[in-house]
Image 1 (tube, one colour):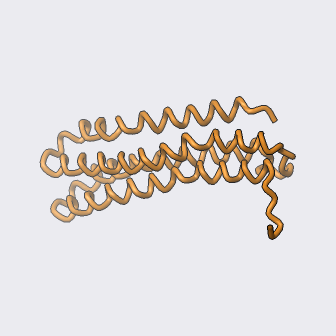
Image 2: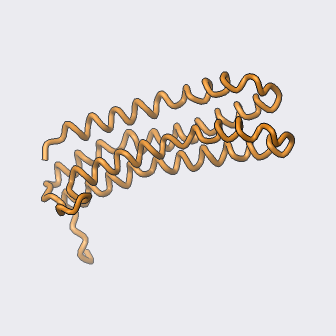
Length: 161
C-alpha cells in the first residue's frame, strides 16, 4: 500500500492528529466570537479590550489538544531526537483511543464556547460593567474541555510502553 505500514506508530500518530482536532473547535469558537466582537467594536471602539478578552476564551481547547499531541509524540519518541519506539499495534490503538476525548470534546466545546462568548460580547455591548458575568457564562463550557483533557491525560499516562 505505497509503503504505509499500519503499525503501532501509525496509530499513535493518528491519535496525535485527533488530539489536534481540538484546534478546529478553538478556531470555530474564536471566529464566532470575533464576528460578534467586530460588530460591537464597530459601534463602540472602547469595548475592544473586553471583547478581545471574551473572544480569546474559546482558544483554550486548541491548547489542550496541542498539549496531548505533544505528550503523545514525546511518549512514542518522536520528540527529543531519540527516535520512535517500536510500538505494538495494540499500544498504538490505546494511544489513539486516549486522544479521542480531548479531540472530540475540543471540537464541540470550542464551538459552543464561541457561541457563549458571542452572547457575552452582546451583553457587554449594552452593559459593559457586566463583563465578569459574561466571562462566567463563557467559562462554564470550559469545564467539559478540562474534563476531557484530564481523561485523555490519565488514559495516556496509564499506557505502558
